[in-house]
Length: 170
Image 1: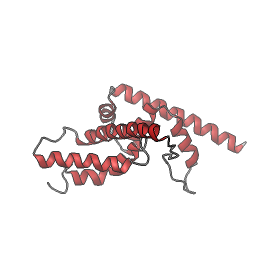
Image 2 (image 1 turned 180 degrees about the vertical axis):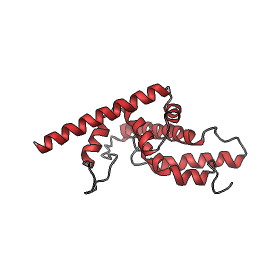
Image 3 (image 1 turned 45 degrees about the vertical axis):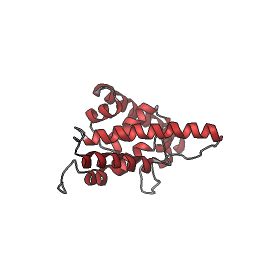
Image 4 (image 1 turned 60 degrees about the vertical axis):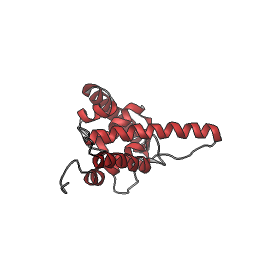
């Protein structure tokens, strides 16, 4: 495959791995990179076996990472129940930076306050740069539902961030 082939697993990994890992962190913060690597191994196995590649490899990757992360989350929950362990791992959506116009901690709280289905769509749209059709395919909803959830999420985050900004100034 050529260096500019959008279906080449190496090119897909280079361009999408960070966004895929962030996406997986919603469900499994401490195993996100492992989930992403496992999904790419499956994609490589598909390409090497001569099987047909998924029609939309980007959407397939996000859907596969989503499914694998949820599966990992479920197995971890079962393990926690068996072992009685408590995990304090918390996903970090934003890294603090003194030059930022918004407070990273406040932005993270705003993201965490969103319902799961809205937060997932914001991550896919903002960090993964997926279009609404791709998001709809990944999440399993209509394009209009994906857009509606995204709009509601942004509005809720804006209100939360503005409310925090007003309290800090007062």
